Length: 94
Image (cartoon, rainbow, N blue to C red; front, side, top):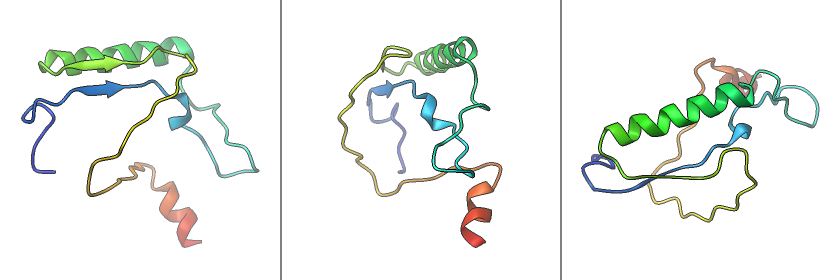
């Protein structure tokens, strides 16, 4: 955790995944109504990849809106859940 991908000359794999933004507070199915639409999401995805490449990082991408099967091994000491709205903590505490 003390070194960046750039410092270690590691490639970055960027895979678009609309399911990263879902409301799970009601019912049995997640809601995606607050997620960005496909046009905006694709622009954000491409911008993110472009910014990584501007840092001289090797970036591989998936195919936007495609059904992809990705096999990976999480190689790291932690998994971090980032919740800027603090909704998960409120859900857990109640």
